[in-house]
Image (cartoon, rainbow, N blue to C red; front, top):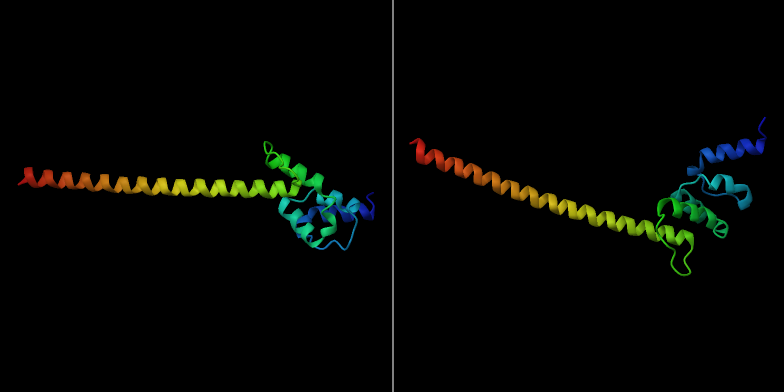
Length: 132
């Protein structure tokens, strides 16, 4: 039969995305809960509980290795800073790719319109010349 402590940890793990203030609980108690947190949730929890920043390095390292396996830490960079930097770089790349695709699609659409107009014009000229 699980203890009350175990039941509380299980409930916290299931609702880790809703946690904000931890009331000064030590990291050793929160570690099983925080290990289940997504990066955004972990960052939010750290924002509300700055005393946890010194202990969450291993959790951020796991997130970095999972999401950015080829990335390397810069000099004097924490794992959290690396995660934030890599996330920002990925967002910039994605935004750049989206703009390139949008631009390419617009060019293709414009070229298709010109071709369509030329075909109609040619067909119309054919009918005017040879039909009458």
